[in-house]
Image (cartoon, helix red, strand yellow):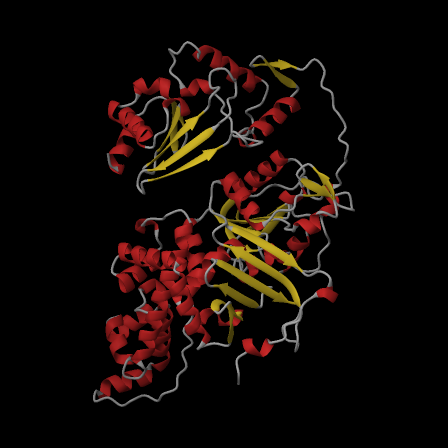
Length: 622
């Protein structure tokens, strides 16, 4: 069965719980499935050696060649059964992912069980009654809050009900037990005199130039709002303590900055993150506090976090844990921007443009030559009369590494009216400018694209049809087709595990930039260099470092980078003031790619900060 046949058969399914992107059905209702589809599902389960007793509900994707086999062991006995295991099968890639929930504190649960079975099923009526009781109690008024067990039970209790023998009953007495801690959440809203860290990243990446509306979810005292409003931006915010009556406004960019880490209830954290995602049209920015164990140890433990000296709750994350929480809750890719700050794009085309821009180097063109005379007097006069136009065209070619399309060059129509076509214009300007510059720019652009495609393998695959038009032009110009680009990128990604190739690249890098090679027992162990030379790394080392930095983010507070050649690690070193003769180490970060972990080591005690004694080894000599 191919993707087209699968999609056609899924559209024929008339029963089951139907969502915009998928259909759910219990295996007891397979009699209504097209026979070929029912057989195919069982064949997939058998091929993956999933026992018949380990799944009872299938999820059929409407848009993709994908299905999931879900196991709710207590489907018939529990009014709101808990998911024990999920096997998601990507039939296009011939890959599958097993996720177990039996040890999770807050697993997903099912509602409206009558939708999963047929009307003639003997339990259909009782399932309907369970749902009707929940509707009458107001439990389904906010569907966003009912997907997980803990939040569902909390919602039942909040409405004054209990579950007894599988049915809802009004509690005879609802005892409100005072918590041993009364958390002062409002005290976590700090007074700031500059933009917060997540807002600074938005400014850095061009999202605060007036092109996007901004909503601050949990805006605290509104310091960011005042600053952004002063710049004339379309911005609004809401906060449960300081702006409880403000509207929650759907916006292009939504920031939930340092909110989830001050909420002591796990389910409320999930609700807050989902609530901010619902308001997001293009980009969600999620940030939380990070800390190592030594910092956390000074506080009083409480639930899964600590109580601070100001009687506020803090759930301190590590980088990988925060990324996992975001991706598990939203089922979307979270892009690390900096420690504790992640971007989640709802606009997937904008996401690809953003990822490309992070890998793109810019060819710095300098006009060093005078025009060379050519035999065609008319062409020479034409260039002289329109030199500004042709120079802008040449810079556009260098920026793209190829001829620009109409929407990529502002004066395209003017150029066409003057000379007829971009190809003719390129032939003309080639007499005046160095054509080798364009070849070099094209090579740089091709390398940038390979790095981008290699690092994109860590994310959900996006087919050629979903790529932006500009990227499609790049693919055609530099690779002929998408398959070639993907193959070359995968080869490069797999090659970062080749320690011999990494070693050779590091030795070559040491010959071209100020850097330091370190040996252990006579074997080359690592190379250390300043971050300003990142653009001079060859594509293989850019993919190596980029793979690690996807876990960490950007290098704003980092000065030196150490590539470990044989262990798949990257160390980042940040100093108190690198301009000093002997700067002191303030932060060390070790990224382990195999374990997908990030370890932070802060040198808080200034007395014990190691000095950088060989700083000249990392500086360009003038």
